[in-house]
Length: 152
Image (cartoon, one colour):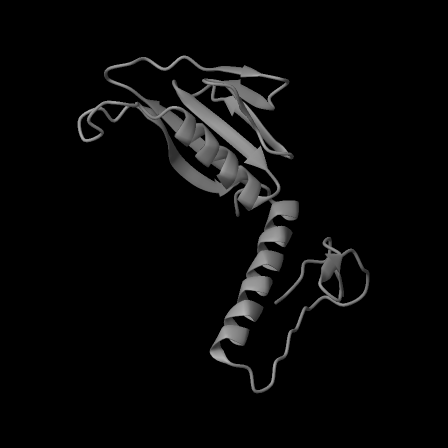
């Protein structure tokens, strides 16, 4: 895996930290089973997500969908929370209302897991209860996922 010059990584035991020097991260496993290979690949994917988050950042866009019950949401706590039924964003995730598109929320942060989990919390808080979910599809749904900085 290639590491960009502006990102500095140090691997010590099970901890990944800053370090200067090498520009490649290589993990070797001899006589590894299928589970071992899968675990190594997962670790490398986490490191790649960490690098992408630090260099580009992650953005998730969510849209309000309603036909039966209008959804009123207000952003509180200095872009760190939303009041549908009081949802606080996870650490490092900020939320904004889109100025270009009506009824759209934009979640941004450096950690893909925290941004995705915050989007899931918002989605779960506004499900319509005690109605036929095949008919009443009102809610807030993820419409787009990607990085903040687009690749040119």
